[in-house]
Length: 193
Image (cartoon, rainbow, N blue to C red):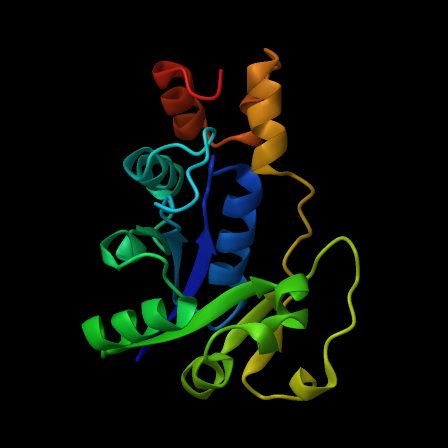
């Protein structure tokens, strides 16, 4: 059974920090593939600076097309909103019964994981791959020594989509922060200006 890591995000825009983390997990863990799950625009919380779903999907597609183990995933675009991760995971299990899905998250998310809707069900069905953050956090006791929770040594990337959008708006050169095809699409479409 192929093991697929699910890396959720708005990817607004998809940048080299996302790429480095996803590729590291694909190359240095037992995960066979990483699917980058693009979080849709919430109909209840319209954000002016959030690109439309199809544009963010295109950015992830262009940023990963040279990496055979990385794939964009738009499963959440088809689910009713608001959506919970547990529903997305159930949908993927039903659609791809031949795959084992794991959830990728930062240490900061693990701290509040017990507050997620149906977190016990998620943990019953899925492994969690935890990425370190710049600021160290204390992992809750209930998650320590859990065989389904894997602490990874992914590089800590201090790059944010927010910073990239601000830099574009102020005319700064952000090319080193984006995979070349992603930069070309953003430049061609005049995004974030």
